[in-house]
Image 1 (tube, rainbow, N blue to C red):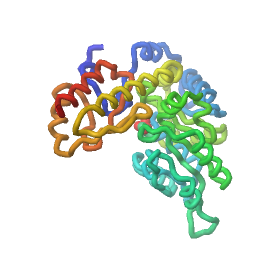
Image 2 (cartoon, protein in one colour; image 1 turned 180 degrees about the horizontal axis):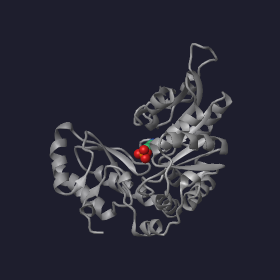
Image 3 (cartoon, rainbow, N blue to C red; image 1 turned 60 degrees about the vertical axis):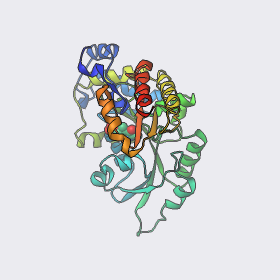
Image 4 (tube, protein in one colour; image 1 turned 135 degrees about the vertical axis):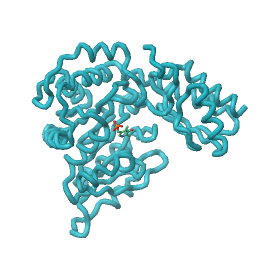
Length: 340
Ligand SMILES: *Cc1c(COP(=O)(O)O)cnc(C)c1O
């Protein structure tokens, strides 16, 4: 491929990955039908494959992670219900307030601990009693990975057990759950254990151009499917994009370890550069703290050297399959030269 993007290194997100030649071939070869009629064999294969992979009864293909999360919230909660969610969570902070706007669902945001989790005592304290002064607390929503951090298996078990014991359902925003599973060396089923539903992005580190998958019980997925149609997410010959998602789940999960190794190498080299502070990556995301007065100059050098970053004093760096070790060395040199 000879497009101009090819010459740029993009460290803003793993959403920037473009479909590989093999993935495009799978898309090209996909059998298709009208998925609103349930006729698309490739969408059906993807949904069956994902349901099995994540250990749920059923799955639903959605055009985005935002919609997939919203479908779950709408399926779990009704008007006047409440969901418990981290203050930093994507479903609370970065999805346009969709649960409140479109679902009349009240979020109860709770502070995230430094490790990304929500303290069990905080979850417990925020579950409202059965009293008409309060919204009905229906759901606990967690996110893994969150800001690149992996929530531990023990914590996840305790949090989901607590929620279930108090009559709540549980949803996992698992946009990057495959990164978490690979980092922990556990199966995808084990990584989502304890959750009644899970949303997984195919379009991030897994490298598909578009799409997310929502997994849950047959009943929950049937409800989510109604909402998907209402939201305009009923797609027709969606097999062409589902084929990319299927390819991503079949071929691109284990290789996330490379992205994690590249992030560890990248952060390790940056830690040697004076004048900046670097977080220790657990997966493919880490942060570099840069003096505010250096941001403009550094941003200019990045642009000149064809490296895309979301320049900020607390700079997020994301590694992915379209950022090779050689690319990363190039970025390390920019930091080294600028602060050297
Ligand atoms: C990207 C992301 C989403 C939303 O996915 P889109 O496909 O961009 O709508 C949801 N949750 C988390 C944690 C994400 O990183």
